[in-house]
Image (tube, rainbow, N blue to C red; front, side, top):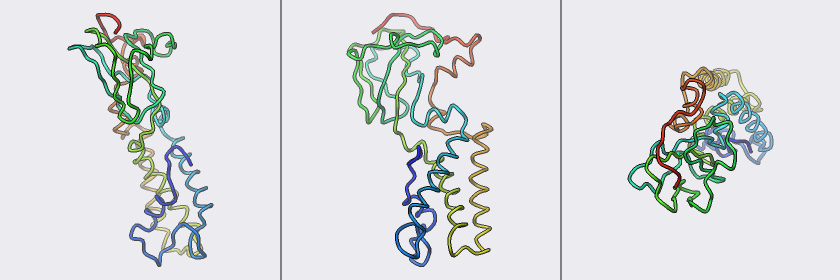
Length: 228
């Protein structure tokens, strides 16, 4: 299974949303489209869609690097929440001011100084943050909602290929195939050109984007105070 976690059930919902018993489905049975072949088609289009994404989105499918959770702590802040969740392999960088690409494990906060809930992404610090502290983090995630838009694109492309390969293919299916592909390729092209985005990714405040916006590529969020 690919990064978008598309199943044959997802494909069946696209091919036959009304569960019409007279319309071909993926699955066992002489009248159905072979599951093994359908899975191969799904995986191929999953890989294709992911490979055509802008680099920043492709990286974020499984990992968020450099999310700014706190720019300037106040009021004895003790809890923050990651933008995506569930999460794992969390690393926290307090008061980090170097170029993000130059980070090292020594720059991270000791894991004994905080805890987090993987399912919700809620991080709790053992001691309230000193006023002025900034917090940046990186983590792996398994958020599937973010990928729904991409999943629909891949499913459209897989659906169109299965229509072509169906034993009952007829010339009347050509228009449906063309419509599916036009929609999918159009959506991918808009993502590539930056004319559209992935909202749950775009709403994250990322250190690399801040560095790009600042002269010299250095992280320029000011902070006062010290560590936790």
